[in-house]
Image 1: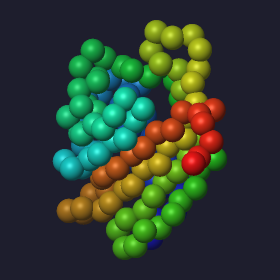
Image 2: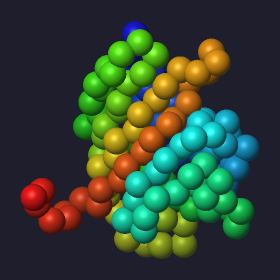
Image 3: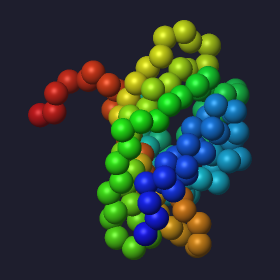
Image 4: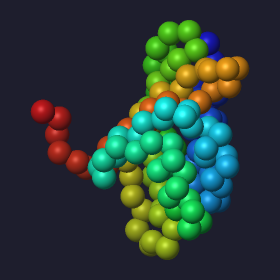
Length: 124
């Protein structure tokens, strides 16, 4: 099984795609069946990559407090805190992210991601 730094590098490639408006790299890292769960609702790979049609969505980002949870052969959950600045904004935001990475066809793909804004309500 790969270590934490391996999965952080994969995740950082997704963030770099958002920072550079790189639809091709974003699509290559997301599985065709990708599911994103965000405060705005559910999105698939096409919606995730589609946000880049107007260019970069993130001006800068930092990933911290990462944790890795192995889920079996060829599968792992990466959880971390992201602090980021949206393109055209001046106030940084923070959220907690969990991403499931799976090895399919010899390549690692992100199959699931969920974002939780920092400072949200307590769990029920």
